[in-house]
Length: 238
Image (cartoon, rainbow, N blue to C red; front, side):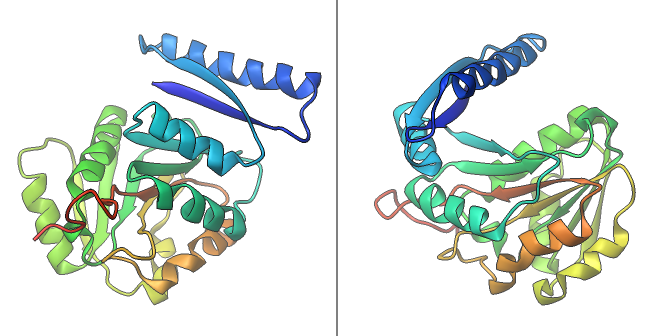
């Protein structure tokens, strides 16, 4: 496991360096408290996304977690930049996480899955990642998706323990309807897709705006499954 902090080449100073080292040390100490070995990485680069993409390739990263400050909005432009500059250059599972409370205090995980997501090559992997998190917290899990997607999900999780419920949801143009189900201590997981993905929907571009406006009090995770690169074999499951 690696913790990466990127410092802007043009705006670096001693204060920024010290702060970055403190952040990395906190991450290492937190991981050590759970008997997890973490290596800290400090990189100088003109582009944060370029630094991330480079480390993903150099270290053969399989899962990327981008943490957002809980007190700040998540600009649509930032997400677009991450998608275009990082996701387009790597095929790893990527999670963009904005916490509002400790994950151990979450009571329900609401997971929204787009239609045809079960056809994406990284579907099984990302579902197992999410399931591991939800099971370790002991919280209930609610899956939203199309009938076909939910059926594939039930089959995939047939031998997995834990409380889960399934709600049919098809219309991403009416995504706000899901927000009516939100309660305090809920965390929302939204599985998204790169633009070239089979499960991509144009309405996904509006998700950051919705989260900023209606979802400030809860934690959320934007999850992008693995998608095979141009020269990495088939992109979809059949």
